[in-house]
Length: 235
Ligand SMILES: Nc1ncnc2c1ncn2[C@@H]1O[C@H](COP(=O)(O)OP(=O)(O)OP(=O)(O)O)[C@@H](O)[C@H]1O
Image (cartoon, rainbow, N blue to C red; front, side, top):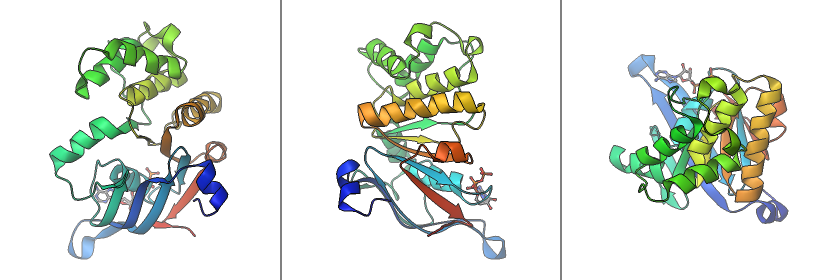
């Protein structure tokens, strides 16, 4: 996390913050505290990796940061706006505008080409059709997939499919990209390719990325690593 003045100059002010976040599942004596008083601050234009053993709370935290889930207690602030406590409709609108999501299993539609997957994503996000073609092609270009945009997912490697999924996630120009284990299904070479795309997005487009990973090689490429253990941040 940025503590020094130099860090603040190199990265940006916080774009995303969690303040005293708790997430409990279940009731009574069956309660599981998945997140236990999480405070974190993600500087703009940086890549933050959340790391921790299975069950440590990474996905729960990521879902809350992505406005897919609500904290039981505490606040989440994106670009100065409190996003915890919004209605489901408001959260969904916020996700469509400000958040790009990438998942472990790519989630591309098999019958659509890479281009159609990205363009369809824009339509779902409610973007006006005008300008979608340029936006989709620009996003594919940014991940190095423009020359293969006519291919269907089946005709692409895992790393290429994930790059298309990243293009889909950034085509509407979100403020932040959130990725849950984006390299888990890739071999180390393809995982590194995907990480290089993330690094370029941070460097060239000023993107902010929060991802989860188990892989120490991936963690090395992040600007900050936050370790979770039993729902708490390891100091
Ligand atoms: N919907 C739910 N209902 C009940 N308990 C849950 C729910 N979601 C998560 N948990 C519990 O919260 C804790 C944290 O889970 P979480 O999925 O966030 O861990 P993780 O670090 O992402 O694990 P993995 O690396 O295996 O994905 C676990 O004990 C899990 O069983």
